[in-house]
Structure formats: structure tokens, C-alpha cells
Length: 364
Image 1 (cartoon, rainbow, N blue to C red):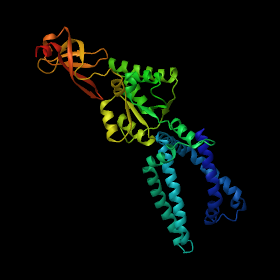
Image 2 (image 1 turned 90 degrees about the vertical axis):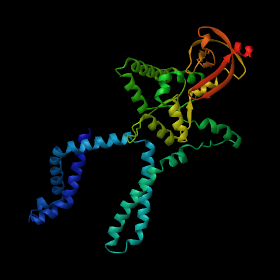
Image 3 (image 1 turned 90 degrees about the horizontal axis):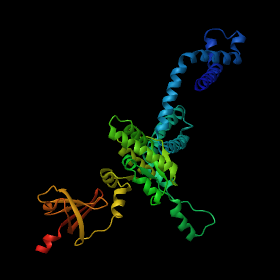
Image 4 (image 1 turned 30 degrees about the vertical axis):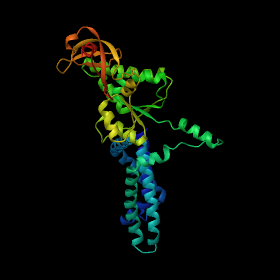
């Protein structure tokens, strides 16, 4: 279909050039006295025929260029296309206005408009492209007012309209807890799965390493569950950022462009998002927030399992997996004892409880 379309365009171009150029060629070749050849209709047909024959040689190059241009354009985010196009249109409009005073000056009225068109068109495109984040925030992140509602109703409707996209990274998909969080309703939509995250997940699922392969397949199963079994809106983002290699960096850039929220359980990605002023939801923070609160001075009954890193330390775990470091607990490994909490360390990477045996407290 594309080849036929290119051939039709070449024939039309050839016919048009034949009408305007072939008569001059005929005069140079002293053929203008042949009325049949000099006729505009015959010139159009001859030009179209010439370009039709040329198309058999050039059509493959043209089709390859069109395919390459189409693939490149599809991979560019729509926000970049829109912002760049608007900047280009604005630049060309300014160039048209600036060139008006030079219309009455010979020679200058031909050169100056071309210079301004190229220069201001390029500047407008670059400004629009580089200001795409402000463009998105200006037009797409404002709550729209509904007609017929009072101001009080407008304020109540605004939070429901301003739904922010939640961008899932690879680690939180493989983790699997995101599906349970969505099912309970603690995370509303729309949930956005970028195509580059899906490709990384598929690459992990195709790995030769059995552990990675199982993790990747688990992630794909989680995505199918979220999309098919849960009452939550799921969207695919098919754009890509070819100038960026790391998937996490692409995710952060997408979050900036869309003013979205990154959902992850990666501690390092969490810190990078905070540094770049990107909103982030760490499900480890959520898991830690819903764990039972333990305060210094409370008494716990735990079973020590192994040695700690420091001298005479013992390690125990709560039912939710929270690690307890028991000072002077090495001698009680394999036993269940009462301990007193001395301090609690809470981070996005998890929670750690420090304690000491209650027997030692009584001895003192």
C-alpha cells in the first residue's frame, strides 16, 4: 500500500513539473514548434511517465526512509511532539509577522523571509521541545470545572478529577504485593505500565538463569492479574526515550513529563526520585507503616535463631519478618526468651529493632 501511495505521489509531482519545466526544455531543444509535444497536457503526461519510470529505482529508498521516520516518530512521546509542533507553529507565525515590513524592498523581500522562517522556526521548535514539562503542567494537570456545579461542589469534585498516573517499575511488579494493594483499594488508578518496563520484564523472563526467569514470569503473571482480575484502570505507555539507557532513568523522566508518581520498592530508586523532586510511593514504606508499633521499653517474647554481626549479638525475627538484634543474646541462640526493646530503627529499606534480654535487666 505504501509503495502504491509513493508511486502516485511521484506521478503527480512528475506531471506538475512537466507542465512548468518541460516547455522550457523543449524551447532549448528547438522542439517548441511541435505543437503536440509543446501541449501542456502532453507535457504533464510525459513528466508523469518519466517520474513513474524513476519510481521503480527510487521507491525502495523512499519507502525505507518513510518506515524509518515513522518508527522514530512513534517512539517519541506525544508530549514532545505536541510541544515541539506548537513551538514551531508559533515561531513560523512570528517569522511571518517580522517579514511583513521587508515586502516592499527588492531582493530583500525574498531573502529575509527565508532567513526568518528557518531561524525562528528552529528556535520555536527548540523552545517548545525543551519547555514540554511546563506545557504538560499548564494544560493537562489542572482540574476542569464542571458546568452547573456550585463552588462547593467544584471543590469536592476536583480531587476525583485530578487522578494522577501511578508508574510501576520492574521491581514492584516482580515483588507481587502491588496486586494485593490494588485489590484492597489503597491504590487508585490509573496504573501505567511503560513499554520499556514491560520489555525489561520480558527480557528477565527469557533469561537463561532459572531464578531470574522465574522472577520475570512471576512479574508477567502479576501484570495479567492486575489487568484482568482487578477493578482498576490499567494503561500502557508505548513511548520511549532512546537517549536514555537505564530503565529507572526513563521512568523518572516519564514521571516528570506526566507529573506522575513512581511506584517502587527499590530503595535506591526511591532516593533518586526524592533527589529529583519526583513523587514516589515505596510499598516498603506502606508495609512498615502497617506493622505493629513497637516502642522502647516494651517486652517481647522471641526465639533467637543465629549470631549477629557484632560480638555477643543474637538475631530473632517477628512474625511479620522484622529483624530483632538482641545484645548479649549469643548465649541464648536456639531458645525462646523475653527481651526488652531498647530502640527502633525505621528506614525505607525496612525496620530493625534493638533489644536486650530481660534476664540481664533483672540481674542489674
